Image 1: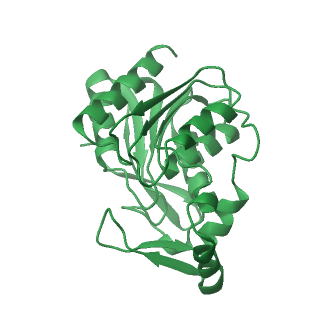
Image 2 (image 1 turned 90 degrees about the horizontal axis):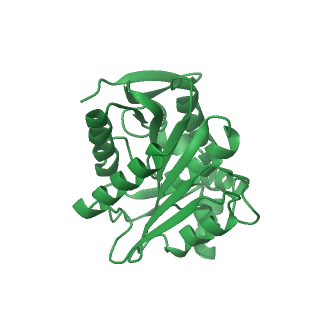
Length: 246
């Protein structure tokens, strides 16, 4: 396993990351909401990158995993800036971003902020603008009134918490109300049985981005996590195909 290093992304906040040297473009994995760099998709890609001699970097957002900072103090803008710090930390040259769920939103924001560095995007159940469509009106009012919303977490023991700081920042960074000025190649994987993010959101991203090189791959019985053996094989094949042509 790659060693853990730390990067001071902003004063007092150190981000944990695992980096591997190798040939480029460098691969950078962006986890989902409250996820970390040691999930099934990230580790499968890291194993493939190591076997292929590819450069890869994976990391934890502030307040998540091994990184410093309080989770409930973080905003979507903070996590976008964490992703940008990792792009800037990577060796000079092009990078390919792989974003899972919320990481798919962040990869779009990062590509807009660093068009000269981001050479390709791979989304896995990408969830742009979920602060808007992912909550009922009653839930939004509770976030604004109470400062946080706590819900059962189907993927873990700890409750799923959304703060007003995060939600307000996310609302200010919504993308799908207009065309998205991204020109690099994009691949979008999405399970048609995803109960959390409808697969039509990947179709909407494909419609809105300016790039003409966009492919959307739908997995008929795939769920939100797309972490089955066949899903991971599809992810690796998709990343390899994209990176081989860059």
